[in-house]
Image 1: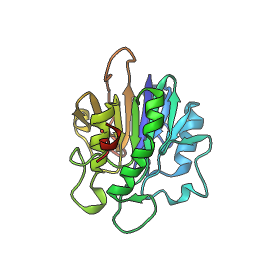
Image 2 (image 1 turned 90 degrees about the vertical axis):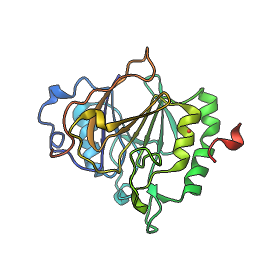
Image 3 (image 1 turned 90 degrees about the horizontal axis):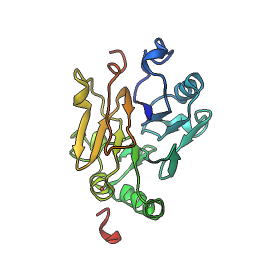
Image 4 (image 1 turned 45 degrees about the vertical axis):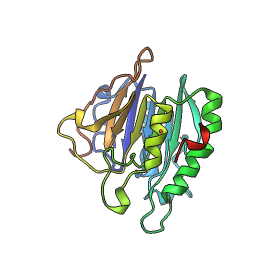
Length: 222
């Protein structure tokens, strides 16, 4: 399975797509937030693949003008060609704006997803706007990651935890990737290609270019 992941900026290579052969064949587009809804509409239409997204802390237009033909997976577990995909929107609370959550609020959202995860037998891919705390996040209030994400990863061990929010240009594609147990944690700032081998855990990743212009139930999420 081949996935195009995007977040945070509109990449010149993708809007419009300049070299189609660099990306195809694709199975889906995954957005980790803070991109214009028109961007996702265009990518879904151009590549003719499903688009799944979570909103970032700046995606205030999505309520009135959501991306056409795309699926919001915030706190939803959906099927992606046999893989179980789950999403979490927003960032850490810092000024009271939309799609901002305190640690306790995000922990409550994760807690509510536990029945569906149990029913489906786990989760394979998580897309989130914010990163896990201490795994590629920042120190300022806005860019701190969620501690409950760390516990979620340790508990459920998805193959991939893909996030945006942390604006960073990577000279080496391997710098995007962090590991926690069997989980690949990927900062997809700009765009990235993820190739997943269903026969292996956690899979494999391959960068196709430089981004833009360049964790007992009661204890699960404590």
